[in-house]
Image (cartoon, rainbow, N blue to C red):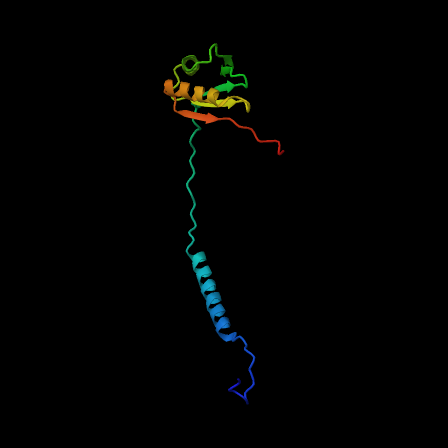
Length: 140
């Protein structure tokens, strides 16, 4: 039943005027905020120092762990594989140096326990700076 006999159905069309108004306001806001950000920059010239570089280099102890579980501290093979022997080798390698950095070079096939043993030996010797050496992959 059609109650509106004489009227035709008008096509609905989108009114773009409010959309254009909103876009213009957004563009004006962006332009104004961009100019304010440029004016708020400061030109700072930092001072330079003519100091000598530090003569004392930090003590670095390298610990190599191979796939079979052998340990080498600064190129010297450690006789045993237990934590106490590794800790004594670290202490001997450090000598009188304070707070050495322990660099662990572990083979990719070395067991997790071998690396944990080195970390535990460093803890027992009271060395807290421990890092791991890595190499960049071949991109395979």
